[in-house]
Length: 154
Image (tube, rainbow, N blue to C red; front, side):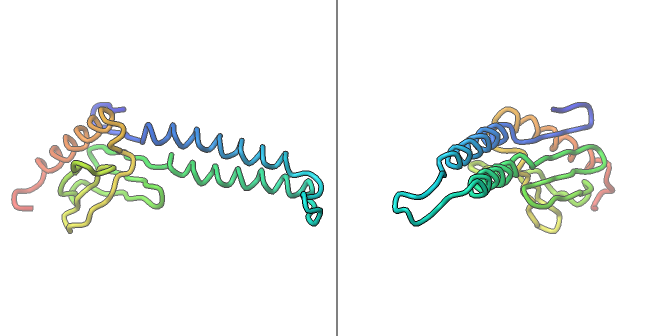
């Protein structure tokens, strides 16, 4: 995960769970699609092959939505930090970052900026324990190095 001067992080457990759920959703929708045949019990509705394909497509779309949870990433080096969450991302130089936080009970880490904004880092999750701790330590080391190079009083 970490080399000299480079920190990369992505959620581990959430990624595994998302992939398993995505496969299950596609399988369930495909199974339901195979049961859609002919007339309904009341005889009023008729399912066609297009309805079966529509169920499979809905399953695939649902799986793609679940796989959005594999998107979060954090990458940092001496120049700055790049954060990608479920929706949107940030590319920040270290001089705008005040601290790297991971408060007790929080689901993921966050960056506190000098203008008091908080940016969540969904890639570093509490459920990943040691992996998350290594990522936080690496980010704090990079931040400390960047802050040591700043002008006093900046």
